[in-house]
Amino acid sequence: MSAKHFINDPTHLVLSALKSITLTNPTTALDSSNRILYLRPDAAAPQVSIVSGGGSGHEPSFAAFVGPGLLSAAVAGTIFASPSAEQIRRCILQRVEKSKGVLVVVMNYTGDVLNFGMAVEKAKAAGFEVEMVVMADDAGVGRSKGGKVGRRGIAGTVLVHKIAGALAASGAALKDVYQVAKVVAENTVSIGSSLSHVHVPGREAGEEDELKKDEVEIGMGIHNEDGSERATTDLPGTVKTMLKYMLDQSDKERAFINISKSEETVLLVNNLGGVSVLEMGGVTTEVVNQLGSDYGIKPVRILSGTFMTSLNGLGFSISLLRLTDAGVGKTLIELLDAPAEAAGWAAPIKTSTWTKPPTETREASQDADVESKPSNITIDPSQASKALNTALDRVIKAEPDITRYDTVVGDGDCGIGLKRGAEGVKQHLSKVKSVKDAAQFVDGITSVIETTMDGTSGALYAIFLNALANGLHQQSSGESKPASPAIWAKALQTASESLSSYTPAQPGDRTLIDALAPFVEELAKSGDVSKAAQAADAGSKKTKGMKASLGRTVYVGGSGYEEV
Image (cartoon, rainbow, N blue to C red):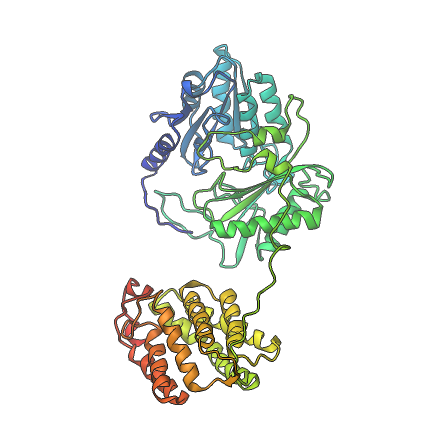
């Protein structure tokens, strides 16, 4: 777990985070003394008010969901602790519209249920129409372990918020808003998993219960609660176990919902706070693939993002909502798709796009690869392939050293990039037909470089090789002639000139030009490839201890470059 934070005072952290929502959503206001974020009276017409909340640390839940079409107010406790009954009472009685009634949505944690429940009873005693729905969607807790307390509430709660909020915004009566919230709660199942526990700002860090390097905790709660099991597995294995807990009808401890292949569903894949957007994409794909292959479930809506976190939790949760008729005059999908003006809600795809998705691609109409024109400059393809394979094998063998050097002076990806390019070219050479034309031979290799090597160096190699082929074409004549060292030297000079249009690098800047320029110069002067190679080697060795003028090395701090 990471115990480093930019803000270590938890009181200041919670209040400043709440304040930020009023800065990003003008429809909201903050009662800072009671930690209530609420919808401004003139931001929406009178409607049934939806109130939720709980401990802080689950952002964007709950405060960032306040806005037209979603929540009317959210009450925040301290980190991972329920707000007080008095905070909630003030919210219901003083900070939201009450003329149409109030629905309170709370997750099934003892402190939250008691405090929100007390506030609801006080509001009822004062003569107001208030209902409460308790969300308990966590399949990580089995029936025996849950006992009389029942399951915990986790990210599926967001679906209750959105659907009930949309119905309330349409002008529906409290009985219907209450009904739709209950239906969503009863038809949603969720589970979370994490690679690590989280550190709460302001507390001493303790690692006594931290997971081992290769462990994942399946069923972990959103307040650092233990999960159902710890396993040493990969992502497919983790997802497989999570879906089994959610959907396996033979598991008598769970089997909370039976979803058949014919039923429509909504899938919510939720980031617990610390998973990169890139990795969340991989997680979402894995979940969707396994739902289809193992259960025949193909969700009609897929939401993936950050909806309910556990601070910076290194995990994710899966929620499935079975769509059913709630008997309120609108479908659950209509309500889910309805617009909401809340900073934390992210579902940008329109209903019409989901129901009638575009189906065309540009792959079928792609023009076939256009073969470059011959240059009439010939090579011995067998000799060229043999020489190249020898050199490429040496590049691959050198990868660990290059990676080690680049770790000191760059970002450590140079060796892997070169190895990937070398392997790609080797594969190309093993498949390509006998190409005797020098320019076409280079073009074939360039296409491989363009697709296998990325980053700055990949672009530079591709530019250089494209220009090299052009340099050969420029020396083309009607008659066929062999590619002499002089022809190669002239083509290399053309390529170097083209490369200089894209990089200011010169010998002495500590770049690949320090080795390339001497090679081109010596080959043009002597026509001797061996001498040119020796000049390149000497140029490379001169960069040891040289101060960089270009590239990432310029701003990578520290020393060590002197030895590279």
